[in-house]
Length: 75
Image (cartoon, rainbow, N blue to C red; front, side):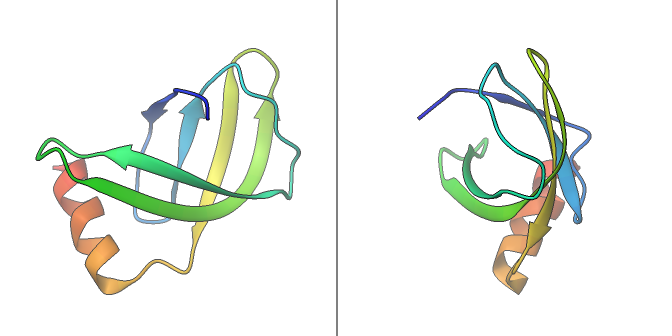
């Protein structure tokens, strides 16, 4: 497990600021702590990788409940 910070979050994906190493095309899961203290698990595909900075991720298989939590996080 690696801690990270999310930037540019949208319903379609986000940028994950992390020192972790990933490969473009890799399918990964992340867990996001919401302001309520709940955890939101998201799955997606790595779309780009910048060593030492982080990676872009496109969400896949987002449920309607997860989408509602994402909307709350974006507002």
